[in-house]
Length: 347
Image (cartoon, rainbow, N blue to C red; front, side, top):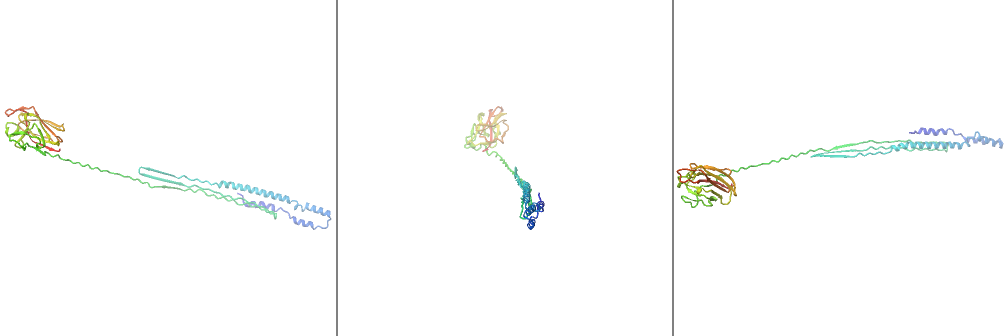
């Protein structure tokens, strides 16, 4: 930086060395007693000696003044360049703009958002120019250099961070399943076949007709048990006075008359003439054997055959074989008597 006081001192130094030429000229013109040659010589000598500094050195002084002015201008230009160059450098505006980054992350039902903003700094500088002027009307020279100034403003940084509320939402759904179990007890013996109410029944014996109790009968006859006392038929009878039997020891077949399924619940049986008679029961549905079982029966006591799970059948088959004939009875075959056949339709 250059101060204005040094510039004023430099100009004042040349102003104090200028002579008073006008007064000397007046002195020379007042000399009348000299002759022409002397006057010319004196005048010439005057101008060459005492008065020389005024008319003869003027070009030199003007040259010096011009040189000084030129030097001042050069100095001022150099000074201006010195000031302006840093100013230019300082006046460079640097602007940096931060990048705003937004990050959003989500995990299941959790959301987080963060935002960051950064502003930049700005710097500026101003430098004034210098001016130099010279006035020669009264042999006075002045040079003025203006003051330079620099202003710098910068570095404001603002950072803002905003975090959103983290919300976690959990939903639990419960499903309740209710299972209702209904246990239905199968009815027992909804149809009891006693063979005591057959239409057109005789007092002694006969054939059990098809359709009786909604069943079709094969190799099945009815008999008044009281008419054959020397046998096991009276032992098999549960409800007076009739029982059913298999004539000649043939296989008894009982089928649903209308195809409706039924359950076999129970039956009471006894051998007619043999002890240790092998009796078999076979239960079918649509021609397929479902359940079967063998039993040994005799003539002195009845046997009740029952089944709690013999359901969904449409055909019953009874067969007999073996055994030993009992002495004193009216027969010796493999016949057997049965009564109170219990079934339940629709099961």
